[in-house]
Image 1 (tube, one colour):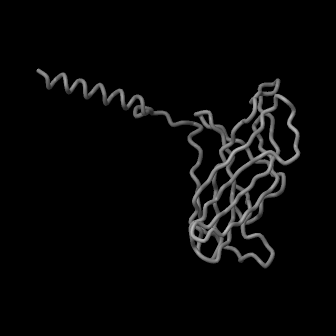
Image 2 (cartoon, rainbow, N blue to C red; image 1 turned 135 degrees about the vertical axis):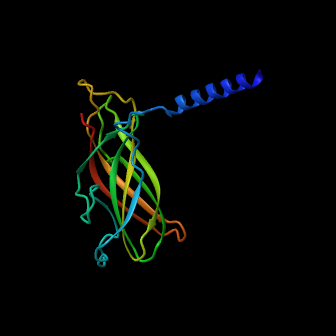
Image 3 (cartoon, rainbow, N blue to C red; image 1 turned 30 degrees about the horizontal axis):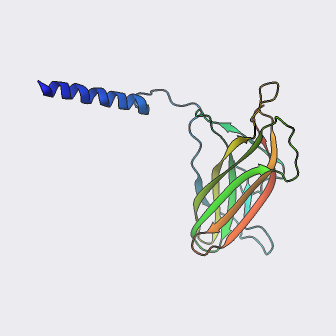
Amino acid sequence: MRLPKLRTGVALTALLGLLSTGGFCVLQDPGGPPPSPSFACSDGEPPADGEATLFFSDPEGGATPLAEDAVLPLEYGLQGGQHVTVGIRHHTAAAGVWSYRVGFERAAGEETPKGTPVLQGANTVAVNACASGWTETLTPVFINFMEDGVRDTSGNIPNARGVLRVVATHTDTDEKLSAEIPTQIDTGG
């Protein structure tokens, strides 16, 4: 007599577990989770003396550096998070693992009116750099609305101006490179 009760209890526990983890969800999230970082080796001449070996590039891909004050769209996730996707190009002489600390912050000296949210955020990713060549990385930068997070009178978060910055550190040698560029975030408001 105890065996049927045990089976029923186990079945109910399994059913509740599937329901709580989304195991029965048949509809895919339209927003989905933020993208995972992606890395690829790419062609191109090595940088000449004095040229950047680390810079932001168009998130759609390509060898062209991102233009100053480029506008990056803010992407909203279903779980309440938001991020922008950035492209990074890095040339190294030898393969190895680098840690990229990528961030967005308000430009120095830029005043924000009281009641206006300030956007800032960061992400750190490990990157396997390509041997003697260019590594292209696409990665999200998680953005937070800081201070009081008040929306403007139309109900929208205003667009943000700031600085996109990356610090790349080789995990074995502690060699560091950095790059930054003024950018804007289009919040869709």
